[in-house]
Length: 366
Length: 90
Ligand code: SF4
Image (cartoon, rainbow over all chains, first blue to last red; front, side, top):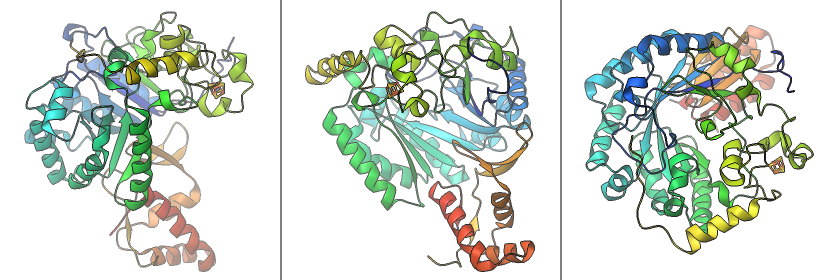
C-alpha cells in the first residue's frame, strides 16, 4: 500500500481546467481524449467556481483555463473572474478564435497571462493543421490586439514534421508579436496525436536541427524571449518526468464533465476510476483517491526503475505512454533505453518516419 | 554589466502570499517560485525607480550589512529572474 498520510503528499501547485471540449479548430494532435464530452454534459458555472475555490484553499497557485477552446464557454469572463477572486494566477490557454477586442477587455482584469496556440506560421500550414479555413488570419488579428493591450503573452507552438523546419521563423514571430515566452512543444503522442503519429513524427535530422536552433536562440535572445523546449521523446534516451514531479505530485486536471484527473491523458488507463467534483471534494480526491495514489512514490515501480539512479528524476516516465505502448500502466516508460519495450518505440519510428506517412490527418472532431 | 540598470516586475508577474504553505511566492507564466526572506526583501525593494545599486544600498542600510556582500547577491538574483523573463530592465 502506498503511504497516503497527508504529511507526505504535498498540495498541488497548478490545475488545468478543461472547461469544454468544444473548439472551432480540429488539430490532429489535440491532447483531449478521443471520446469527448458534449456541451450538455459540461459542468455549470457555479460548479467550476466552487472547484476554483476548493483548489485555492488546498494550495493550488495557478489555474490554466483551457479546453477545447475555453472562450467557447459563454461564461468565460465569469469563470476567469471567479478564478482570480479565489486568489489564483489565471492563465488563459486559447487558439484566439472567438476572442474579440470587447471580450479581451472584459477578461483583462482577471486574466494574468495569455497562452496563444500556434499551428504554423503561414495560413497554408496553420489552416491545414487546424482544419479551419481563415483561422490563421483571425488568430493573427487577435494576437495584434493582445499585443496592443500589453497582455503578457506566451506563444505555444506545437511542432511536428510539417512545421519543425519553420522553427527560426516561429521564433521571429514570437518576437514580432511581443511575446515574452515561447513554448516549442514537440507533439507528445497521446490521444489524437497517437492516432496521427505517422503523419506527425518528425525525422531525426529535423529534431537535431531543432535542438541546435533552440540552443543558439536561447543565448541570442536572453532577456528578450524565454524559450521552453519540449523535445519529442521517441528520440530520447530517457523519458520525461511524469507531470514534472511525478504522478499526483504537483498538478491536477479537471475534465469538462468534472472528472478529476492526475493528467489530461489519465483516462486512457482503464484500471483506474476517476471521481468527479460532484462526488467528492477536490481535497479528498487529491489525497485519498485510489487513482491519485496509484503511481505515487516508488512502491508501484518495476525493479528496473526502483533501483535506477534516475528514479527521482523521471519517476519512471509517463504512465499513459506505458499504457499506450506496453499495455501496462505500471511498466517502465517504453521510451527509456533500459525498457524491455524500447524496441516497440524504435519500430514505430521506422514505420512512421522511414516508411513514410499515412495519406491524410484524422482530424479531432467532437 | 552595470549596476545602474533599473529592474521592474513586469505585468503578468506578481507576488503572492501562499497561505497554505505559509510562504511568499512569485507567480508568473508557468512559474511559481517559492521565495526566501532575502528574495522577499530584494523584490520588495524593486519599485521601478531604484537601480540595482540603489537596491543594494537600500538593503545594506536596512539590514545593517556590508554593501559589497549584498550587491552581488542582488544582481545575481534579479539577473536570474530576468533570464526567465520574470524581471525586466527599464
Ligand atoms: S529505468 Fe525507470 S527510472 Fe531509470 S531512466 Fe528508465 S524510466 Fe527512468
